[in-house]
Image (cartoon, rainbow, N blue to C red; front, side):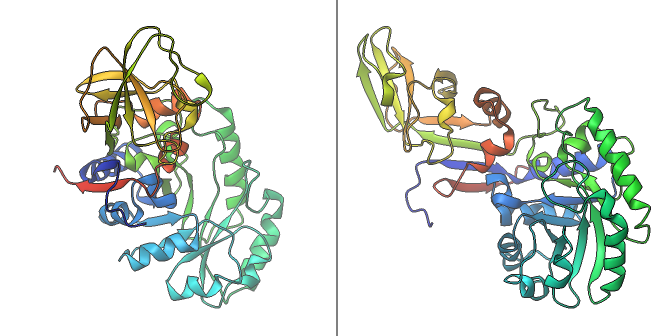
Length: 358
């Protein structure tokens, strides 16, 4: 959707992305980085983030073939790994656009066209996609038998790496290392996501790490680190200020009632824009350098804040996320979810502008 008159906008500092990638490489000592830019780079803009990241990364990763094609059409040249299950419908696209497929089940060997590159995906505990460890020998035989395809990598995915101190990270790593004994000739091995790269750096990075959130300034769990800089600030404005009397309620369901007379400020963004309804009566936003609480149920298109006895003017700027307001991690904490859900909820009704303060 082309926006002519957006009600909110995100300011994205591209230099922060560069700094975060350099910090990640420095602190992990890893040689290769795969930049995950799926779901519109977690709401930050896939092409813009990828263009900025490209000089500092070796690969890109996306969820779907369509996302990969978008990157290619946007001018991205480096290798792109597609995580989704390949289908006959999309088989030709891997060749046309120079994409690398993920094979996670035996029928996939016959799905792809001759000459297509692929990575083998093993399930070491996630129980979502991938070959089982017990199938390693058969997978190797299939890979050897299908010389018409090009195996260029092998990977797995941690289940609990977002949580510092999880013993299961080591369990999965041991399972994967056992699998790798059958695939010593494969040139690229990767397993670590952002959580593993930040919280479990020792002896678990293999040849490459995959990072989506870290390049944008966040870790995946509730434990954030001070050496990453969030790159996004989301802003809107006040569109109306309403007087309210004690005893009057705000929004659907009467979930908040004024204890005294004052003012309510209405902001033209709601859960249709990415402010989760679960943040009703929890979130705080910043106006004129002060925090004001969201009150009443967040609606699809509007969010209301309690201004107390301050009658703030229409068109006054509201900082919703980032900058001096709550971070995406604080939003996630209040909503009882993760940073991924908070950021990927930021959708097409938001305008995005990109700056470079380097």
